[in-house]
Length: 153
Image (tube, rainbow, N blue to C red; front, side):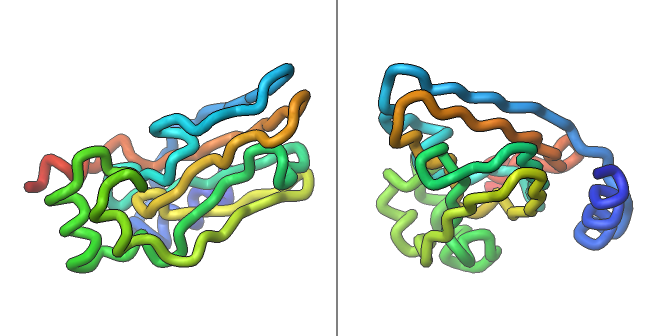
């Protein structure tokens, strides 16, 4: 993973950047999940540039809370900047998010899968839709040395 991390961060930032690494494990036993802010609502990570590498050691199916992304919502244009200048929650509940919402892509995976997303775009973890499901994922996140976007205004 280090080889991929170095290669991708150099392509994006012009140099190799050391990520923060987190392991997330979720297990829904007896409940069907409901939406929550910052996780299962479409939201943005407000660091620029901001991307994550995701590694899934196990299969993630449509009922196991896969990642979902609004295609094109990461592009830094007037619509994007208006969303941050005028938004309140910086998620899909803001009326200004409607202009950023594109086609939603849901990422289900086989075991031993890696993918990349610019998470300054609208993204979320979908809800578990069945009981007794689990989800394991490693995040490599590249934000430590960059400014939080909402401080630029």
